[in-house]
Length: 311
Length: 242
Ligand SMILES: Nc1ncnc2c1ncn2[C@@H]1O[C@H](COP(=O)(O)OP(=O)(O)OP(=O)(O)O)[C@@H](O)[C@H]1O
Ligand SMILES: [Mg+2]
Image 1 (spheres, rainbow over the protein chains, first blue to last red):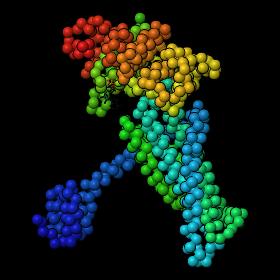
Image 2: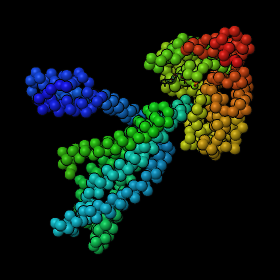
Image 3: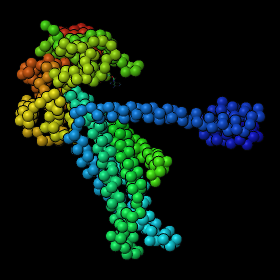
């Protein structure tokens, strides 16, 4: 076996050896050579990293990621182009709004309620410790309205609506229903995609407002488990502590969340590969990608509003 | 007389996979042409090129006097009202009732019809295929043969001049298959349509074919009437008629 005295070289060797499919003799030789020729530790480390990146196929995944981003941007562009052209599918849009709202209302209400209740019960001990228990309604209110309500609701929305859009369009694609629309003179992009994206963009904010309201009721009950506050007083305290600058960015980002869930679900479904397996994959990746997008959008919106001073 | 469909030197490939190469055929007015070929030779691809769902790489397709390649979106749309397509998988909209499925092609924006006219058209199309009482059912409640008939009714609703049938009898039992074949002939008599019928069900071929085109290796291998091809000595042709 090769003899390597340099500690970094040894780490590199061990890593590669523990990883049979990557421990190609060439790699081992390369590391040994770089160590033996007395190159600095950094180079050796860099080499190791390069190899790991190369052999874990990270470049391939990066390329796929960028390709998808490109395709998705094109898809979004097409959405705006087709969306503004006349002959809007109002009936279908209304039907989608109803379906999307109706499908997710129960789930979002339930989770919202539990969230408000649990959050309050968990926050109380810390506040009691600092002797600011009276601030409980204000704290809970801010937490729910500014962050937890929109994000949790959007995530549940992604799980429920994103996956169902992905699966629905995917199976329509596979069973040639989208082609059938095309030959029967209805623009399937407009009828299916535009209406769904607009519907989910419009419905998520509504659902978030509802969910916030239900969460606050949960929080009210949570407050009342240990102490007694009147409904009126609780909501006065919550609302007094919410400034316009708290509510507006939170509200605006829900539109972006809804848009992201709608467009990613549609994109994945519309371009799903043939076969039932493709449909499952479309639904699954619609949820995964839109959930990640929700966090990314959240991050960006917070930065932007921070810079703009709306905070 | 001018043929209603003329295909000249058509080429189509998917990546490295060549499907059609130098395929030519014509369909005359009031004629039923059967395209015969083994699974996967590109029969569906061929008729999808005709209706513009797929773009050919090279070659010319003239339908009802218009070059498909030269049509813009609106013109293509108007053309597709005159050329109907029966999908191999039926492609019924499974979230809609039979009535809504049939009304869907009538949504075309330049078509103005009153509610009564639409209802009358739907009822007529359904009674043409003998399924008037399924009007409020969902596609999943229908049997395979019924779905095929509803899909056929949906293609008929705009009174097309040309119908492209993609394997209308595949997956049906022989009796139902026969019924569908007869239905195709009835429709042709009633509305004087011209059609391309893709099939490898020899009963259907015999019943419906005015002329047969054998698609093989991406080319129009040979063509003729059922009797002519039936008598052929070429083993490639014979294998279909055994
Ligand atoms: N969208 C597509 N992308 C890539 N390849 C395709 C596509 N559509 C068809 N093909 C390929 O073209 C070939 C012909 O397909 P086609 O569906 O026309 O066959 P077919 O003759 O209709 O067969 P069947 O009788 O089974 O319906 C197949 O090998 C198929 O893999
Ligand atoms: Mg086919």
